[in-house]
Image (tube, rainbow, N blue to C red; front, top):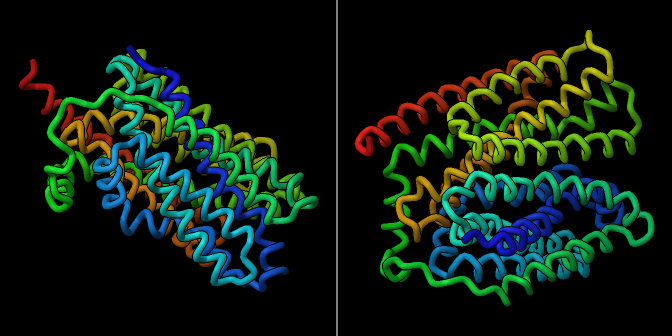
Length: 395
């Protein structure tokens, strides 16, 4: 029997964790004024989670398997609370970055542990829907914080946003600590060394295929939505506040795509179709988003459609984690490996798009999206072939 309450707690914990991503961009002007942080440092402050995730996601994933996913997610949320409160009390750039490093480890730990926790709480038939619900954690949390920040910042400053994000983690953290999950029937988690767990994950071609799909998706999605406020202001003449809210609403639409992906998977849609189809839609909508000849409403509508289409991919990828993990007790390790692909894309996607726009203007941006989606489409075909090969002996 699927324990939907456990799934709900995991999703709530993920959303609370994502608040710590969404709190930084709106607070940058205040941080620059109060602590003297320059734009380069602000960029590192925003990207530190992705850098650490790209560098050590699989190792943190292995630790969550060893610790158990429930305890690891609770610990991750605890580190977010600690890091955010330390950050709220900091008066120097160095201490703020140290607190952000603590937050980053906590966020990666929580996000990598959650898939294993969900997998242990559901029946196989509910995999698609449960992981689609989990997939809303990032867009829902980031967009919620971006919409709350205009009300928090004027009254409480950036420190108030840090305290608010910390407080939001307490309820799911306590719920996780009180949660009871039956011990899975598999080998003692201490019996598999770190090297063996990493080797079992990295040696399998399907691990690289799924991580590559996530890399292609995240590099394009973060590039588009990282620069959407700039595009709205510079190209479409929208004010700063309106551009921030419009971006937050568009990011929230990504959560709709996640749920839609879960519903389609439950209805029997194949994984490769739920990846290849959105790749085509991402390309088409990108040419409208960055097209000078289209009216504002159409370009913004295309951005929303881009977000919804993109949401199908993480829902599908997350649903594949418990299915293609090397073993049931290595879901966290496999999740960490896949999340490394995602974080690499988040690190380099915006930089590549910025370089292209610097050379050719915004008109060159959709061709970057085309390149990433072609990679995603090709990997979706590889996934189809791999799944057919796996299914053949069973038939």
